[in-house]
Image 1: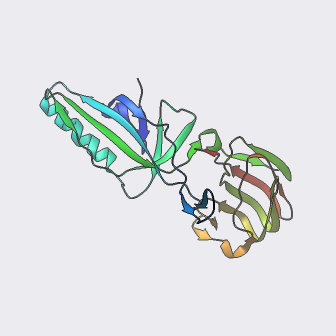
Image 2: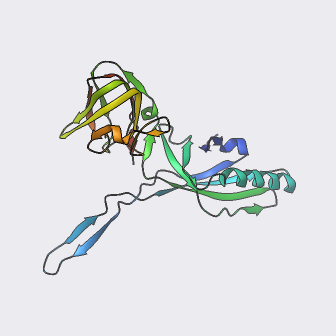
Image 3: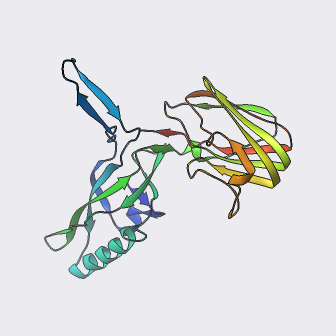
Length: 243
C-alpha cells in the first residue's frame, strides 16, 4: 500500500489511502525576459533561485460510520496542522531514494461521499530540491585527504564537523572551485552547516573563529577535501540534492 510520511507520521497510520499523486513536478527557474529595441531575442535576467514546488496527494478516509469518519478527520487535521510555521521531512513510497522539506500550508477541503468516505487533496509546499537519503549519512575521515563524488549537477551544502585543537585549515577542491577555511581556535570540535550558513559548537556560534570565503560547497563530480594543522578528524554529511 502506498503512503507518505510527514513530520514523522505515516499516512496509513492515520487511515489515509492514496488515490493519485503529483510528486515529480519540478519548479520553474525564477527569471524574467527583457526585450531590447532593435535586438532580436530577449535578454534573460535570472534571480538565481528556484521557488517552492507543490507536492500533492489525492486521498480518501474509509470509515464504517459517520462518527468514525469524524474522528479520523479530527486526527488528520491535528496531524497536518501541527507546527505549520516550519519545514518538516516528507518522504513517500513512490520516490524512496529522496526526501523533501515540506510544510502543509493550504486549505483542507474534505468531501463526504455516502457519509462514509472523506475525499481530499493534501498539498505540501516543498523546497525546490529533493534531498538524497544516501546523502544524509555521515562519514568520518582521519586521513588528511579524501574525496567525495557528487552524482548530481547541483552544488550540495554539507554539514561538516571538524575535530581537533588549536588552529588548522580545511580545503575543498573540485574543478575550478578551490576554497580554504582557517580555523583559529578549535576546542574539541567546530561544526559547519553550509545550509544554515553558520560555524558553531553546540549552541555557541564560532563564526568569529573561522576565516574563509563563505561556506563549503560540494560541486558536481569529484570533490577533494584536505585538512592540516590541529585538525585530526573530519565528519561530513554531504546532503546531495537534485530537482
